[in-house]
Image 1 (cartoon, one colour):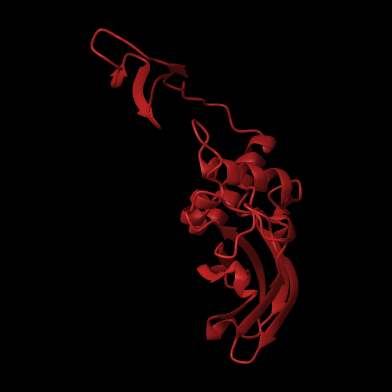
Image 2 (image 1 turned 90 degrees about the horizontal axis):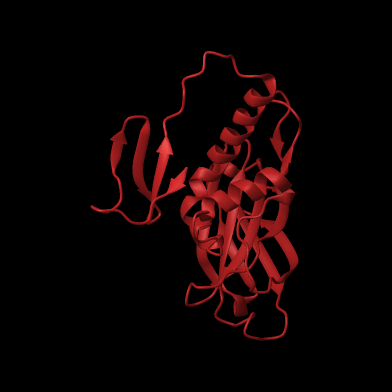
Amino acid sequence: MGRYKNGITGPVRGKIGNVVGSTWRGIAVLKSLAEPSTKAPSEKQLNQRFVFAMVNAWLKPLRDLIWIGFQIFTGTKTPMNGAVSLLLKEAVTGNSRENYAIDFAKVILSRGELLISLIKQVLVLIDSVLQIKWENPSASVFCQANDKATVVVYNNAKQKFVIFKDVAKRADEQVDLQLPADFAGDAIHAWMHYVSMEGDAVSTSVYIGEYVI
């Protein structure tokens, strides 16, 4: 892929021979058309395609959250690119299509410089309510009382996310989350992170744990 900055009539758009001109994230690029291959993909290639598709599919429902949580990625690498790369590197177990899995404890859903809080207690209350209590570090530019907490809950059995965006402020030090009634009896995984009041800074997400509702 080549970058095309200037020309007599501006950036190239469309197909010219075996070259395609387009604009991607505000950058004019030239790409050659891929030659069709008649060679069957190797086992390694099949495994790579499978795990990449698995991670992308798992993160897809969190796209809007990822674009905030990985806002540190700019230019040619999108927030979703960053999230996918990190999950593939840090949180995928197994070595083939038969045993690939996601290690939820190692999943990171945001990355930034705001400080995280110490999770002190997590309780499963009646009627599918998840109660989370935390303790904050000393106040600073990276730890402000009005930082907004977001909690993500995932039910693996039902393959369903519940996102509690801006559900509490850091200063609250507690939140009660009403989960769907049909989560009762299922194990859930949960993560929490902060976004500044202005929305221009985030914390790295913290894995809260696995609990049976």
